[in-house]
Image (cartoon, rainbow, N blue to C red; front, side, top):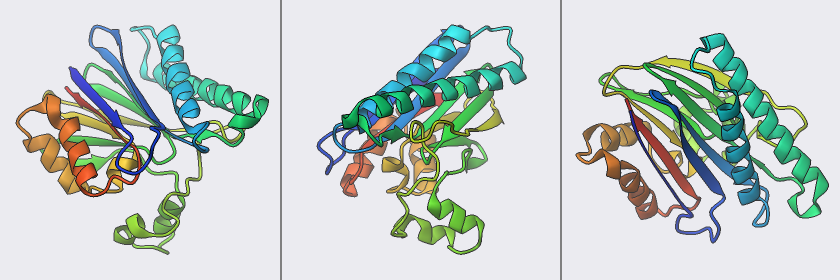
Length: 243
């Protein structure tokens, strides 16, 4: 298993409010996390950094290679709960952090199984010989409208309210996360990214760069370059995992 990550403020934002982490839990087990902070220049980066650190450290503290799938799911939910409490508590204690929050998407890969958890609209994609699939579902206003048949999927990226998310780490005392399981084979990929990438590239473009790019270790850089060539109005973060 190999992993690469990259984060960049993009072309417009002065500050990078995204954060990521790649953590080797043991031989054959890896944890990758991406967070996209919000709440203004003083606190978005605090929320994302706090969430990444607390979530990853809690998983490391609890990790046992003999865990079954149910225990892994419980552990990830617990780590989300702790990250949410920590960000929310800091927001409540310090006026300069009031209203801060962050998305979170993470993948724990053990052997040929990935357990993916998400809150917000940062995404996880699975890429294999059959193509690309979005594993996570955005917790966003536009996704709700698509689900209700009020908005066509192709119109979602340009809809005026596309940046409004319905769940985030740290904005409420309690948050619900979604958990997904994906079977993997050798040569498959997982891609975690903030919406700074997914808002400027469609799924097939991402598939082409990941699957057909010659140098996999430079894939995140190629994705960033495409985002920047298209204006990169937001921070851009990606983590690529090759099984």
